[in-house]
Image (tube, rainbow, N blue to C red):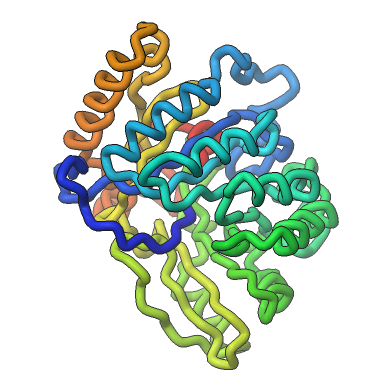
Length: 361
């Protein structure tokens, strides 16, 4: 759920979906595995030792990922974000970053990570051309952190990763993503903000979403952004900042005392589907037009059907354009506008969704 500024206008060949939204952003999941088991994403009860993840041969290789990204750039994509699972589990990731950064039209390559492996990889990623890093961090309380990482994470290692990312000097900076659950980690939000105020790191507070089908989501678990803003403003007065571009996901605020800024991602209480410009590519090569999609389009088969590069490129370009032209996805708005589908704060919405670890956040 991360974005940065882009002033590029719609190109003559850029597809626009049925709701008038252009294609600007491509999220690429390079790995379906993760070294955490966050209950809201990959609960241990499902993703246990016997769970079958993708075989390496089932994942797109770097040549295939680069080819999809190149065709997407020709259609107007300017920003790429690498996700997982945990993307730093993918061997040789700096090489992929270097290749994607060099593509014509790509202005920004970013990464979302849990931070555990950043001490090892941050310098190489910076040299490869990675522009921005976002680290997922849900609590500074060791017990709460352990719970929210499924008992797999080590808080001190994540903090080392954040420090390593800051030291590497990424041009677009370092952000923290915090998923806020009522009664789980919401009381600790001020601790996270206090830690990163005046540190040049932007914390973004994300409403707990009904991603996937296995996290037991209920409306009662959501702390609406407006409630969080009120809590925070009582500690540190805030003032709103204007969007940097149409479709910016986070609503930005600055601390009045000059200590930096924070962001609020309000997919549940204030949906922003109307300006969504993001497509998502799974690690096994399926393209999804929405984070809450039910099905994707297989690009891996297309990529591996022919050895003729020109033929593959043309079919890929045509397929990407067709998918986007026919796109009508607006799940979060539908969730909001159809409240009768939700009972007692629990999920009864009928749509089965792809799991977030499979296509990234």
